Length: 234
Image (tube, rainbow, N blue to C red; front, side, top):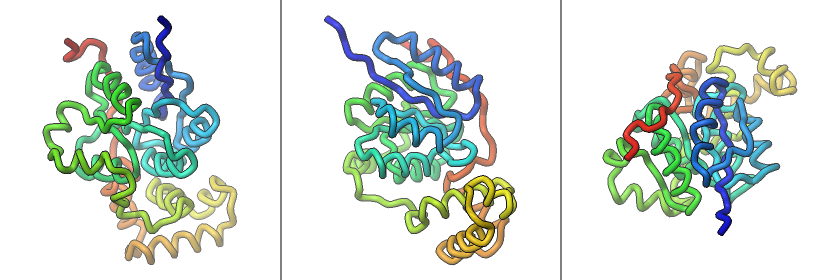
């Protein structure tokens, strides 16, 4: 009997990592990577177009980070199921990932077996954390995550455009560069910067950058580790 495959959209900005993960996932007959995205904006557009079963979303990507991409996807496609893939296991990253609406969190140094299992669980509508992370998350918190809409991210007061401006500011781009990137006027960029500083009560670029790193909007560094087949696989 034919078994329907779980369709996967893979969002990761490093080509070698993305291609490696795709190759390893497609070794399993029930998984099919139907599209790849190199940044958050592309991921949002592809999910809206293709409606994959599960999205595997990197955190640190250019133009639009994985957390804001998750937020935008769930706004336009409420039933989307998303797993965050990160090189960092800090509690802050896990917290902001789940608050953004992701149903799973897998570390980049986990085995492909863990990621594949995560995709299957999230496809069923279950919350999933890799074995290492699951030990650190108390059962009441995991149960709470099964109830969507109860928690809101600390930065929920920012609009999507303000989040995009915040990321680009934290990545070191000037107002002129941000205006060109987002196809808006420089004065509009300045207004967005003013608003997000007021909302966050942060008043300089260095502090905005620290905030962006601390909340997982951008990562201070990215570990380029391709998931290895067979590691810890029974």
